[in-house]
Amino acid sequence: MDKKVLRNDLILIGSLLIVAIVSFVVVSTLSRPKTYGYANVRVQNETAFAINLGESEEKDYPVYAKNSEKVLLTIRRIDHGVKVISSTCPHKDCIQTGYVNTFNRPIICAYNQVSIVVSGTAEGEIR
Image (cartoon, rainbow, N blue to C red):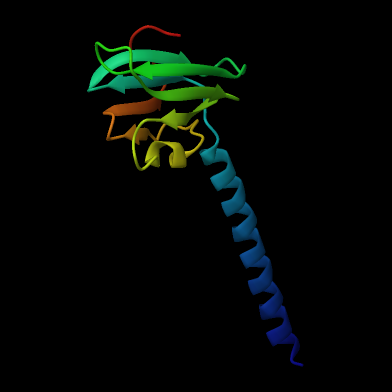
C-alpha cells in the first residue's frame, strides 16, 4: 500500500475522532442546566406558584383549577427537576413529556390550561 494514502487515511480518521470528541463535550456541557432555577406553574394563563428546583428532596405539588377544589394534575419535584405524575386530561401528553430540568423545554397540559416552565426567576409564591 502506498505510504501517502495510508498517511492521508490516518489523518482523516484522527480528524474525525477529534471532531467527534469535541462535539460530545460541547453537547454534554450545553445540555446541563446552568442553575437549578424555578418551575413556574401557570393555570389559565395566570401564575399559580413557583417550585424551587434548588432543593433535591422529592415532593408532590397538586395543581388546582382556578377558583376550585378540583385537582387538575400533580407535579413531582425530583432531583432538581419536575414532571407531571397525574392529570385529569384524556390524552396525558403532559405526563408523557417526562422529567424536565432545562430552561428550554416546557410541560404543557392544554386540556387543563396548565403550563410549567423552568426559568431562572420565580413568578409568584415559592412552594
